[in-house]
Image (cartoon, rainbow, N blue to C red; front, side, top):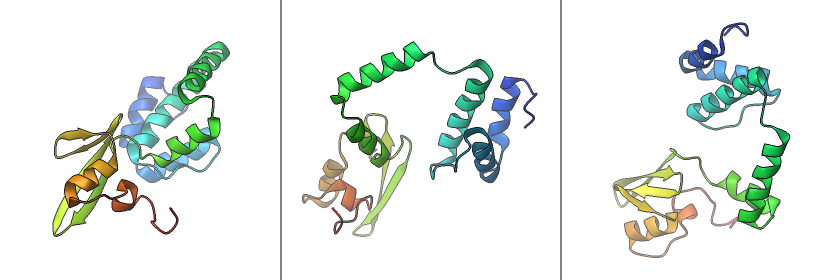
Length: 149
């Protein structure tokens, strides 16, 4: 990808790059190690960054407005909102768990989870539907170690 190519061509090139090339591009554009997320996440963040560098980022007043809206939603607890965001898998992630010889696939959605074509607000509700008993959904799907909980 040539930095002098038109922006649409640079964005299209992201789709044809190998994951290792995307990670190298991340290091170049963000000057940090890429996060351990899926390819789609890397592509979308790189596309945003390419446009941000070419056209400029958000205006300071827009950033302030977004921060104010975020504080209104989470009560201003910045640490709590960061922890929540870091723990929740990104939308599109598939969680796979075998239970009594049956493989169950849960897809993370923007507003919760989907299992067997039905939306759920929590992993615990899905784990309960699968097992018939109460489970911590994060533990059931291997996202949290019971001993550290």
